[in-house]
Image (cartoon, rainbow over all chains, first blue to last red; front, side, top):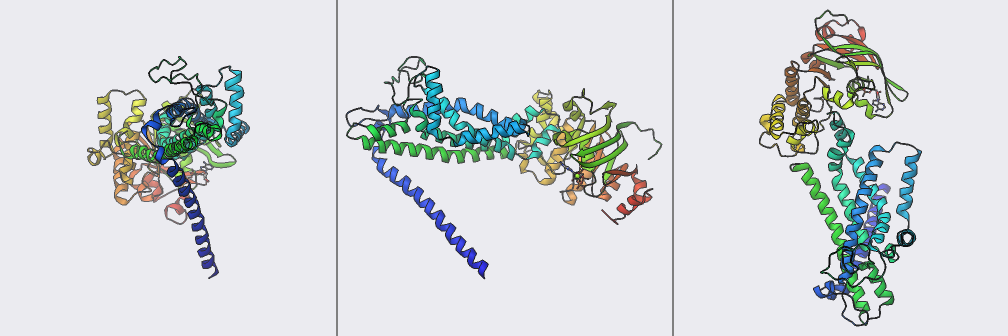
Length: 296
Length: 257
Ligand SMILES: Nc1ncnc2c1ncn2[C@@H]1O[C@H](COP(=O)(O)OP(=O)(O)OP(=O)(O)O)[C@@H](O)[C@H]1O
Ligand SMILES: [Mg+2]
């Protein structure tokens, strides 16, 4: 009788907690979206911000965020997946490996502002580049590497051992076994992790304030020369991202519609991050289905 | 263990000991396995059958704590010597595991993957190899219209026959089977037994089984293990009718194990 009662009580309490969490989440999203909803139009999404007058947009910031995301992933994915493969398949079980694992843990718990200051020191000052997209991408790589390494390692470890045995027993080399048997089977997990990391990159502000900077040059979207200062593709130019823009407009915006702009930008940001998360699930599942049912 | 035959020995183990850390799993085993015959390993659970079997293609290398002592000669070569290329060894000594473990790939790719890796790149050669391997494994008729489907869509028995086909496609000399039918229904089991009987003309087969009737039906030689030791190895008929050792007698008459 007593056990029954405890069971009931626990169920009620846990349900309440779950409702609370979901309620908070829905409330938060609803609030941000309803505040920014009226701003969501093509003009706002594509035109550059205005420093003094109302009616500016977030075009360059949106572009910067996306471009930074691509740059970061180009650097972080090979490193993260490579390190994850090492940790799962090659690292011997010894003190050095434990030390590496501990370092990754520490790195993953660093506040992003600290990563930003580290970036300022190394990628901005020591290199003499100044505020650049590339410096921002490197800082975000530092920030996301632990997540990517861990996700890759876990995904590889979760592939049944029998898959590896099957391949090795056929005289396939270890490296080829990893690349052609284990990695494909682990891909859904790795993709999910990579997309979650993308969401973090997209929403990150603190690590970028002092690395990619708080300003964007007047971008000329007809110039794709990679090294001209107004080219959107030049990785060695400062680049204010959407998240940084929200922070800046909110704290020091001069335009009469600063609040509006921040709300609109926040809505765009939230939608993008939501899209990343949903697509992570969907894409991961899709790849898994493809891998286990389709031709390959 | 002294049977006069004209048979050629293909595997010879000399005083083989296998340890997992402190655990002494296989004790001082010396045996000869004949070419193109079926040899069955029997004995109670935990007596070291799989361990010995896995030493024959060095799958125990995967277990960090595992140590193999003594010599194992396959086709005249000491497989534990440092000159041996482990990938080539495993091409010669194929293995099928207790639980079917097809790759998370298509049926076709399950078979073509390893031969392609080992240098067979011509599409037509691969197609032919896939078909002939599936035919030998008595699976062709069941899967010929769905080669591009996932191997995981097959039934357990079909998956195990696919694993056998995959091993055969490498054209090994020796095939190690570790309880290949233990997770299967009687009909699938029968199919696999028939398969083993057919394959022995071309391959040397070593099969671990808990099913004594199965051992009696399909093998020429039977080796009985107990707590890591080889108690008796002889013609299968002799082991099952008039074993020399009383422990063997006790085991096959079901008095322990
Ligand atoms: N990876 C391992 N690490 C440590 N000990 C092991 C390992 N694999 C097997 N052993 C031990 O070695 C002994 C022999 O195991 P093995 O798997 O060879 O037995 P088996 O005869 O195949 O048994 P079964 O019929 O149940 O498959 C057992 O005592 C087992 O606990
Ligand atoms: Mg076993």
